[in-house]
Length: 404
Image (cartoon, rainbow, N blue to C red; front, side, top):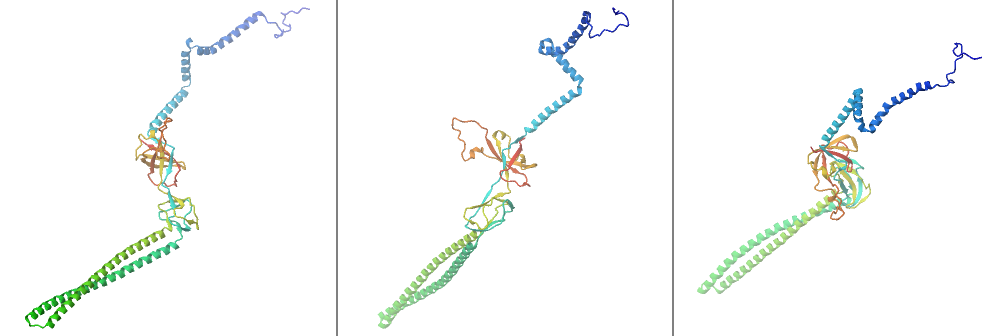
């Protein structure tokens, strides 16, 4: 029995099973075209970017302008950050150009080698490694018994020389007295001779006139000869006394020379005795002790090293950094061992030549293999105040010199 589809009681047809009509297809097709039209504006920027000639650049500007308008706070923040970074870079450059720094710098000092000047057995080592000491503090002692004996012997030699000088002086004084007596005898003999001459002459005259006897004349002549002999003897004695005085004077000079020699030996013995005690030359630290009690030391043997408190910075700046560097300029000193501290100093001097010029084997550039290399020049930097921390030679330093 046929079913009337127009009847309200007819069964509904399943839409999934119902064939699609052409009119319905036409109704659905515009939906796909709408989708393509909606996608077209999204794809148009790509095409615009790919072809700037189609007017894409103005559209980018409009897009950027639109982004700025949509996010004004973000854009302002970015601009502010850029300006701050630029200002910071300019400020850093303006400040950095006033300074020169290098990390090729070290603590330096004139390290003292403590050695033995005499031979002997060490009886005491009064310090330990790295112990701080003041100037004049005892470091080592060497057995001084032999040197005490040498000093006593030298003192005895001085005493003997002084005694000899005293003896010669006494003999010289006595000899001067003998010379005075001899000269008086010469004077007496001279007077007696003159009287004998006058008596002899008078007796000869009287004998010629017949008023004197021959015996009287002979007696006067004999007296004259005796007085002449006495004068000659007195003169000889006086000359002998003078000669003896000259001998004593020579002995006195020899005794003086012996005394000076004895005193020099005494001074040498006393100096040698003082060398048995080795003291610190300046304030600093004793380090690298190589001997112990009982060690036999030889002259010239190194016993320890001594680092004075007086230290400075040796900074090897590039030669291109020295244009504005002058003595007296302030320096900030950073020491690797004390990262939390900043020390202050000043430029003391700039070495008159590069470091290679004073090396053991200076570079020889008179060849065809020359390659120009920026040289480094040592600059001495001293501390404004003695450092309150321990600083030793070789410690790494970064000095910053204010050159403007």
